[in-house]
Length: 414
Ligand code: NDP
Ligand code: PMR
Image (tube, rainbow, N blue to C red; front, top):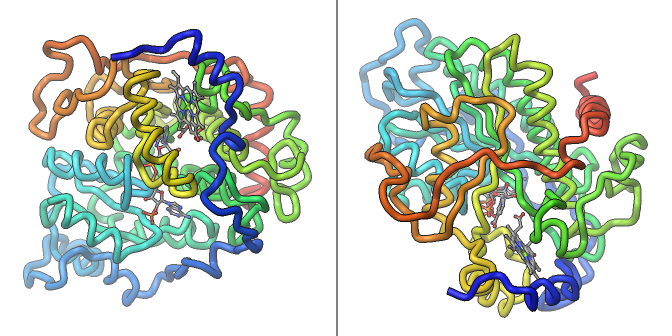
């Protein structure tokens, strides 16, 4: 395999995330609100709750006599001693593969928190997730109301057990949009969905999860938000929250960027990943001692063929996996990436808080964190988990604390 060379470094310096790979057609998109496209905001009514069921027929026997309603909502599925694990964006790519991996271990009852419930149900079946191992629930991260409704709907589990694990995985990447698109609440979508939606979700779930023994919360980060790496430091644009002038001004339309500068889609995604990783260190600082929850972030590797890159030209989507596999060596397949994320909440060795998990070695390591629980790392040289170091900018305590306070204000927590 060809590895990373100085010549590639030069290419990196010349190429930019936004400009080198422009979209297939430069479409002048209107300022599209998420709601006008695909939100069906959930409500707390039983009709909608029953919609989250994966089973169409309810077994007669209720397993949860303490709360008959909850049992009804769950179709009589017995969770037993399984951990209750919530995954956002579980209908595609990393999230779906992680959900399938965890469900198949038999150690987790998975709540697939998705924006498109029908899609979630369909892909769960396609991925062979066993009946009774999961439930599909509506969560539109581009709507703060939907986030609140989702947390409220989770109360269906209240009499059974608290949520043991929360994985914040969903994201959008809009590198080629000439103009920003907005969430229901008027946030630029990359920041609104990837960061603000998850920020509110994590805050609303801390108290419930504090009741679980050994709870874990993971927000997926990325190398491209860390400027101490080639992928994040050399490929233009770099993540940079500036002095958070955009957040200070409220972070709502017409303000699209964290630093208050004009919209730049590729950068907005990277900035949102910085906020994701900072949120983890702040959650740790504010809540770890009092709740015992282990807060972590992770970089799964470059899963170069997920729909995250849907806006890119067809040639880019073909070339990118090849480039990542044979030039940088940073590629990881979706199944292995899913196992890696699953490992963060399932491995007894991943209980440490305030860690940014990464894996050494390259692709084709499927099975290292396998559903049958075989030990990882036996043989071979790659795929070993380790505690990675984030960039100084991501670890900057002052900015992180300011980011937290301004985010809390933006989502209506303060
Ligand atoms: P995908 O596009 O395959 O998955 C993203 C998921 O997020 C989908 O399930 C999508 O739903 C969901 N989603 C998007 N918008 C919303 C919304 N408004 N509300 C709720 N859910 C939403 O991308 P990946 O699997 O590649 O990305 C998963 C995570 O991994 C992201 O956090 C990303 O930043 C991170 N990551 C990815 C890397 C890569 O190389 N691919 C590298 C490093 C990190 P739907 O199925 O309906 O589209
Ligand atoms: Mg990048 C070791 C080098 C490395 C790694 C690990 C990544 C990861 N990338 C590397 C290098 C390069 N990339 C080089 C040398 C180039 C110039 C040719 C390059 C380009 C590039 C583009 C255009 N890379 C990209 C893009 C994207 O649009 C992706 C992106 O930034 O999305 C935000 C991307 C990525 N490179 C990665 C990873 C993990 C991505 C996906 C981004 C993410 O989800 O964070």
